[in-house]
Length: 304
Image (cartoon, rainbow, N blue to C red; front, side, top):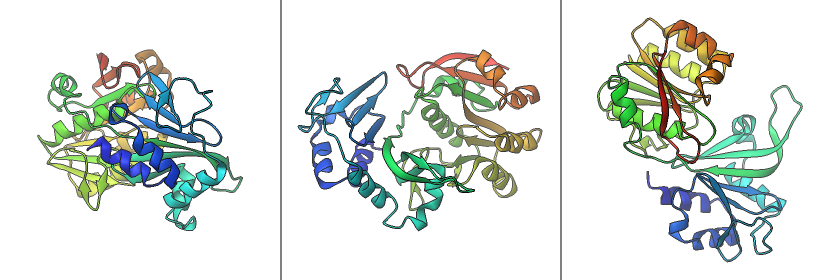
């Protein structure tokens, strides 16, 4: 995927003035960019590994958020951006407002912040902040992991903290495995493969079948029923429903690669969500990544 395409796609969802300034930011300042954060009456943030800068009205970047020249938006402008994200139909975007994010293509996910309603199924209203997250394809980032887990013949948990590059590594490992054998990628938010009109913007392997916008548990069950995978990939195990779906498949010969939020083995052992996975022996390895200053780099590979 070309990150510049993602940058231009983000600009298309903004007001004319904000778009104009965003496109004036030098291309060198778009390199390694991971997020663009827009908050009501606060400076627009450009987030990079290990640092955050703020955009001025002259398309310059400063590390001073109190700089008087910083570009700020009002609440009406945020609401206008949300209208574009909803394609001017809030009713048709209820699912996104319940889940708290939009997917707009090129692997870009837009997280939203605001007020949660007190209804049975809460939705976001009074939105006051937007986080445009840019997915990055880094080919070769998983080569060491691929080799050390027997070229994809073993199941692996990719563990790390926020912005540690878990998804980046999962994407590249999927590419390598998918080039070798039948693989299924469950891409709930469409930020791994970035499928557009049936075509994956990212290279996830020539033998990889992609299930987008489906929950991990449903996707795992569907994959087993219909796609006969040798390996299943999914991002961010976070519910016991996810765990149950994986455990139900355990013993069938299908291998798994998945990410989970955990910065160390000690933390992984303490998380309720990971205990049954460790006890069952589903995963043979756990790869712990370094911090956000060194995204998608392995700190430790542990045999479980």
